[in-house]
Every structure is written in structure tokens, then in C-alpha cells.
Length: 238
Image (cartoon, rainbow, N blue to C red; front, side, top):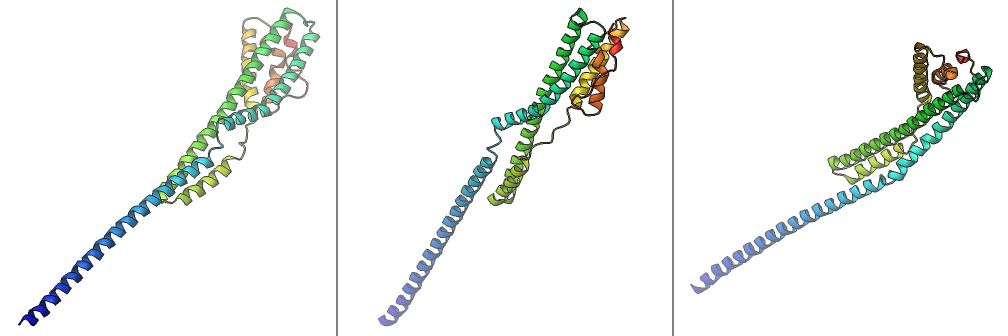
């Protein structure tokens, strides 16, 4: 009978060994799967971090010197036109004063001072406008950058985010279209006209360089930076 016991005992041991081996293999497979999942997750986090770094680098050129350059670019566009307008206005004023024999008089000094004050305001407005353009571009860049990052995370794909960044930065590098400076000149013309009307109301015959007020308004309405001779209002200097 011992051989029967040995037979069945050996079979049972083999079955137990096989079951143990299978259990060990199953456990190892689970361990390998968990390790692979952890590795995949780590690789994905690394890829996303690398993608974020690439997106940030793609926008790195939009820094403070870039925005300062935008301000300078606008002023290079606006200031020469303002200067040309001022030169035209100065010529018209001098001609009007000469026609009335008012050169080197107190009226001359007052008109010249008023002109300098007003054009100083126009140049300051241009400076403020240049900052507006820079800030608008800064806002656009920040929005585009956040959009690129959002697209990367929503798609779980660094490539999608980097492609969005590449398209956005290419579009942002296009120089903005500047508005005509007629708005700046028109505002100054309004101030001048208002001052002139106030002077007439107070029984005076002058105002803020009154001989050129109408010409400034005409230039502003026509989008000109200042050209031609002014004859409007010359008779108002007495």
C-alpha cells in the first residue's frame, strides 16, 4: 500500500508545487504590471513637464525688452508725424502773428507757450498710447500662453500644446497695426477750440494758438500729420 500512498502523495506535492509556482508567477506579473504602470505614469509626467518647459521657452522671447521695443516702435511711428504737424502749426502761428505785427510781443509769448503746452500733451498722449499697445500685446501673449498650456493638459499630449504654442507665437510676432495719429491731434484740436471759444466768451480775441485751431482740426479729420498752409482764424489775433 505504501506505493499507492507514495503515488498519490507525489501527485499532490506536484500539484501543490505547480499551484505555488503559478501563484508566484501571477504575483510577479502583477508586480511587473504595477511597475510598468508606475513607469508609464512617471514617463508621462516627465513628458508633460518637458512639454510645459518647451511651451514656456517658446514664449520666452516676449520679455520686458520686447514690450519696450513695441513702445519704441510706436513712438518711432507717431512722433515724427506729431513733429511735422507741430512744425506746420508753428509756421502758421508765426505767419499770423507777423501779419498782425504781434511778433516778439506778449501775445506771441502767450501763444508760443500755449502751443508748447498743448504739443507737450500730445507727445505725452503718444507715450501713453505706446504703453497701451505694449500692455495689449502683453495680455494677448499671456492669454495665448495659457491657451497652449490648457490644450496640452486637456489633451494629455505635450505635442498638442507645443503645436499650439508654435502657431500662437508665429501670429504674435506679427507687428500690430497702429491707429492713425489723427485721434491724438483731434483731441488737441478740441482742447484748442474750446480754449479759443472761452477766450471769445470772456471778451478776448485770442486763445490757445487760435490762428491754427481750425487747421489742426482739419488735419485731424483728414488723418493728416500736418501739411499745407493755415489761413483759418488768422484774423482773430488783434
